[in-house]
Image (cartoon, rainbow, N blue to C red; front, side):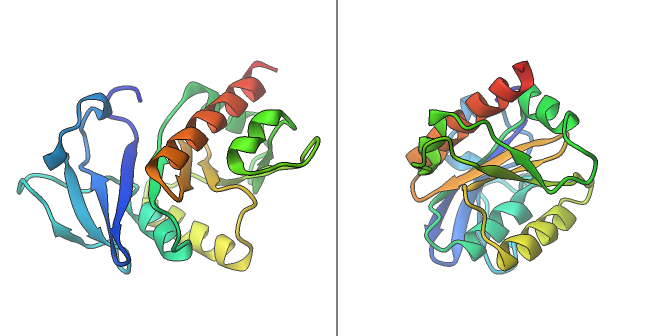
Length: 182
């Protein structure tokens, strides 16, 4: 992850998750660089340093943990490929068709020549608005793959374990890079 961009979280228990504090370089995180957050309302319930503030995307993480109780970790990042992929989609588009590559197996999509779409959301300065959009859409129809993309911003992936989420993040980056280079 470039600079201080992105955020990482992992479920602590059924009601809480740990998330990276805002403004930290992700390649040099330490144990006390995480805040404990309540899933129900996104409130910080524990921090190791008074000056720590939660990541701007905390509301999105809380929404995903609330909607998908088996989620153990969420990862959000920024990439040139993700921004290029959204730049090539129609304005106000709701999804991005992913290439039917075998890499989709990383999201447990096992069909031959699968048709998979990545949920696409509009970017807003107020990230809680994005979280509300995610909640509304995914309550109606859960996504086929456990990932979403915010236009001109970046992807968020989730999985049962931290390793699963990490693998999916790399798979999605591969797929978005492929789209960006076509």
